[in-house]
Image (cartoon, rainbow, N blue to C red; front, side):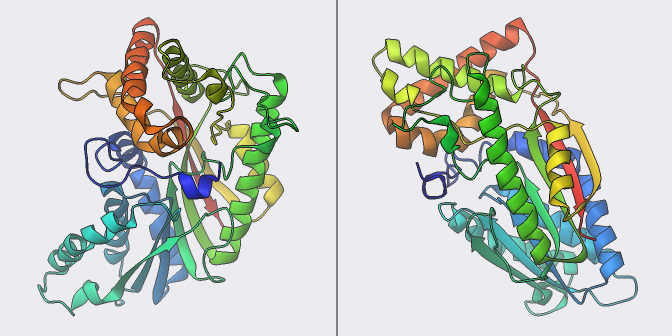
Length: 365
């Protein structure tokens, strides 16, 4: 499967869209927003650019995209320090299959917000004329921008997605070595976790090298990604959610809705690193100084009339539907995620599931 051509968040603004089902990601970004804004401010005060380049990598298409940019612009504009506001170059990046149209359709409202912040009410006055927004489709595992054109890079809930399903998961005949799982589990052969880590290491190293070429000296990145606590890959965190999805798919086999051979050949392009692995890759790459590496958990809140399992199922569906529908067909999706939500609630009743997230702040010397 060509991940770059298939993988995307569910577009639009419908009930199953990422736009309507990204509240968990929003909550995470809000929890660490003070660090993000402190980092932006530090870069601005240290470099004092007349034109500042900002990129959101893996921006997707929901309301979180422009909300994050608003906060960043607001922070910089409030620190003019007796000098005129800089020109803002804002680059929104995701894979070519992303619903960029949804972002473009939200831009008039975004510019209206800018006018209100400026207080002028006119098209070509104040901060409005200083902000230029562009979409940059393409994989961030490689170069995207010209040399030294960026000052700040933000990426939230994107770097745990690998550039591809690791080739080492399949033998020479194309058969999966991990037939009883779709990710790393207690049923996985020991080499599976190494194959996944090797792919993560290769991808993150390429990401860091590429961003180093694109950032100015003193530029910084704030990266938010899913991870795990400790060296054990099998935990009751992010890996456990994949175990539940595998169980939901297995349950559909008995109903004749999924072929066992199809399930045996399906693996996810995901990896939840531990703190030590992130540090190892950053150290060996050598392009950045690690200023912060913190672990946190998102507080679980449930909406009115909806269970936690249903909320998780809707979130996962908005992220994984493109991949699952491509491999298994669209007809299983509705039933699959009803079963998935039921299983999550069932497991939560037994014991807490605790997925963790990392915040990483890097500086280019």
